[in-house]
Length: 448
Ligand SMILES: NC(=O)c1ccc[n+]([C@@H]2O[C@H](COP(=O)([O-])OP(=O)(O)OC[C@H]3O[C@@H](n4cnc5c(N)ncnc54)[C@H](O)[C@@H]3O)[C@@H](O)[C@H]2O)c1
Image (cartoon, rainbow, N blue to C red):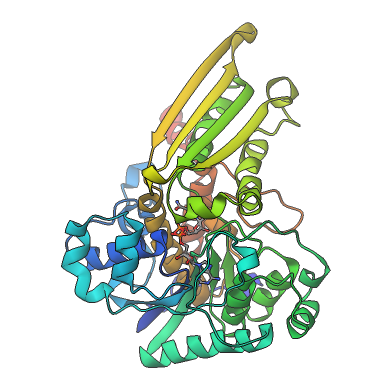
């Protein structure tokens, strides 16, 4: 991507027409909570709480200029009325039935929009049980072989576009977490990946088939799960070639959100860390999938890395070199989507005196994730329209394991991530970057 290919203020056209949102895993808790929420907001029944694009503001210029527009008024994002939802699932329940199964939203919120939700019917999925062993759906594509399945997904996208007369589409993976997989030779470049597809190589999971279909059709692609999917050289190169934005991975909600809020604070005050024990109980379908140790390993990798990057033990060995970090998830059906996450944090301060912090976050996983899906869809569409392609590091704010260019380390600190995101918007709209320097306000005073 070259800087002169990026459209900036005055060159960015307002979004026209409808934007298709393509979701592998459309029958899941996150997807249905997102879709139902958007429809409730469109009907004026709810507010978009948790969504930065809808509720957030952005400071522009100097603090004494008082220019603080809403983000959605500042950058030309697609409107909620222009979103059209479609996707795939391994169960054939429509969005109303699937949302009722997920038990995130109560009937009093689902029933007023039942007419809308029942019209959203998943397309048959590309599925291989060995990648998600605890599920066994039947609503799957009959096509045999990876190449035929890839072509079938591309036909689905083309049909969806045509049927709804869509101007643009964005794909966002909200499907289950696949088993742990490391990047291997077939993932290193597009040719080897294509050859692997032709010989039905078992190292190509369904999530890669969807992602490949999106990239080949010029559709921005986002990964909300910790799966490898887009985070391999072959996909990154394809995104570059097709000039498509990609972002991932693993929505940052719940316990990791808390971790990336708290850890930067401890580090800012130079407080040491001896140990951070995190455990969760979770009873939804995601919890069931993560009860399989290989799916959990994918999640564990994603959750463990954040402290290391925030605390930088290499620069602060006496504070952070030897801390013990443990993350556990236990499947506990009675809790459903209402995950409870406990953190027991052992820190030390002046003269090494120990202290403890306990966090008991009784959260609702999909309630936290849904607004992230909305923001990511709107920002990925913006990225495509302004010519930002490849990895969208400015969207790190939304992910547990942010994708990043080789040779750079990922930024996990939520506040740095937010600053990065807002500075990207300022850059696109021709506004000055905000450095929070601030001394300039006092220079004139001294001179006077
Ligand atoms: N806060 C959160 O809820 C949160 C945070 C971070 C990441 N995630 C990730 O987001 C994803 C969705 O979470 P969820 O709670 O909605 O889970 P869920 O189990 O309710 O939904 C996942 C859906 O994906 C479907 N699916 C599985 N394999 C598929 C395939 N190959 N093609 C199409 N559909 C397929 C399943 O049938 C299910 O309906 C998970 O990977 C989860 O780890 C969720």
